[in-house]
Image 1 (tube, one colour):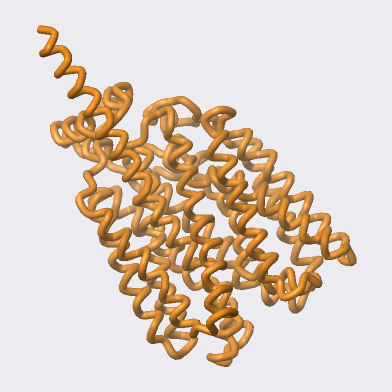
Image 2 (cartoon, rainbow, N blue to C red):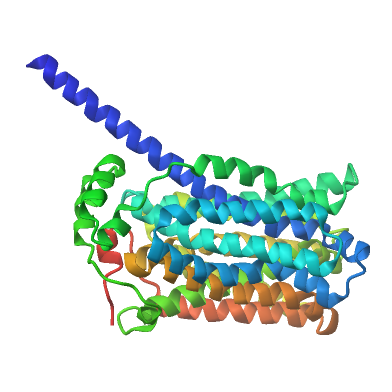
Length: 445
């Protein structure tokens, strides 16, 4: 009897270890998608000057190339979310990455501005779809006690990718004078590794339960979910078809408005400033600006790591609201004090990057928690697309605004965007820490 009990305990322990390993792997392969997103969006900032000279681009094309992947994400987010809610998370999880790899390879061969725009647009579509699949999938497999931390960790990967792209671009351009096509094409390497790592991932048990495939859902839940309460919670899933109209129904319109506006206001000023950080800082008298740009993005990485460490301790709202007010204040200082010493300007940019990253870490947490399974992909995709309107406009318009309106007015506009995000979050941001998905995504009027 004792031997039998020991064997049973040993099997349970091994099963628990296997589930933890799966959760770690799933987090890694989803975070990897965020890494390559940050990488392709960051690396273009290091070579945009070289591209402009080589392809003889106007300010219009410079902004358009900088925003091309963001435009693609605007398309791919809702499309990928719709397909993920209809066809399942699993098939989209590999298909979107295969499309990204194809586009990444094509970057080696472009020889005109319009070709580069099309290729990066395609890569953006794939990334947008990955947002709409990855975060919902991770939220549906994550144990309740770690869900926020794991979802926010994906933002760490994004910032690592973004910062790493600046380091790679800096080294390859200054030390080795590598052609910009090769620098852009380096995104192929992590994408291929990630594609292979994703093969064999299971389907979401919540999605299966929502589709009435109870037996499959139960088997996968028992095999992969760490927390028994999460296994039990999937039985609360309703067999209900999700529609785009549900996003704006009385039950979910507050969630849709909050997530979309919050995300928009977080990324619009950051993408604009960070993508062209080197040139922006140079305009403020900080040398060539590239070292400062790496510092800005490095401190942003620290900020999102801090949120990961705190999110399951102090909750979501405390990491969402105050930081947006801080961003508004420091950008207001830069905008109003146009003759400020360069060192002070750099400090303000560093504070902005840190505070902005802290609240941006929540942009991937909220959609996975407050939308129900039948529209979790679509809701995430819609919010992604809406946010990329801001990011795309910011990236596209910043060169024009800096040239025609001046740095001061440009920073005041960015500060105003932060104020809008803070005010909307103050009113609409929910607290979801420690609650089951069936609770956090329950209808609200």
